[in-house]
Image (cartoon, rainbow, N blue to C red; front, side, top):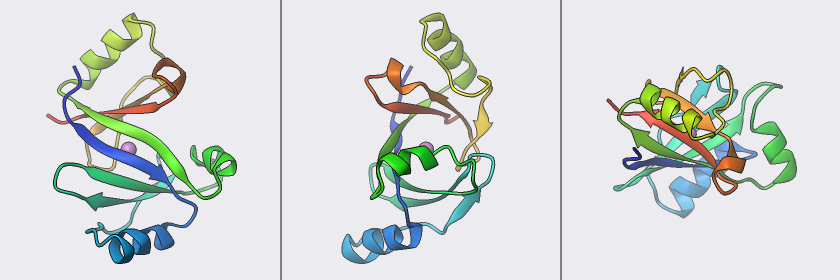
Length: 135
Ligand code: CO
């Protein structure tokens, strides 16, 4: 069911500072900022040859990463995103296996314009898992 790692996401308290760290200190190409109000985050992608790193900053008071940053004030690894061919089939299989799908269980459109879902970290060894449909 899982295909490639699409990206690894890091929550950051200050996106401009994180962009400077990745572009200037680490010498990596970083995308333009993208506000995703439906997800409560502003994101950039660090574009590497084999995968991407998503840097997430809270957007709005109800941001789902606010509590995470309260616990991890300097930022931290937030989720890993795997590609799947068919997100509805993946969701149904995971629910049948007892995994908890976050939100209302319906895919939302993610940062790449593709459907995404998040899975409860307690069902996946303490790691928040994002699934993204790639075709
Ligand atoms: Co993500």
